[in-house]
Length: 81
Image (cartoon, helix red, strand yellow):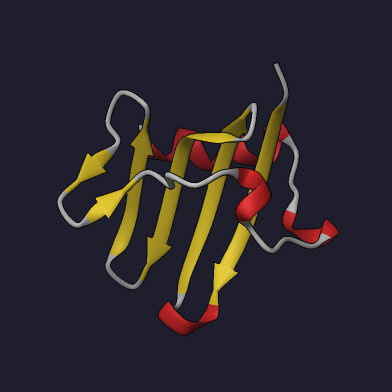
């Protein structure tokens, strides 16, 4: 099982995404925008208009700087509590 963690800013919509992928599929996601933060997971994949990323990791156009450590992701995820 391969775990990958991504931090990606989507300029067009002014949203910062944190994504946790397991074997090429998103299992957790944080969306941060001017509206606040939304936490999505396999257990809670849809909240209102927000939905857990349903494409493969390999479908994203990523650079080396988009990858973060598990610790960086977990630090952000714990802010939900």
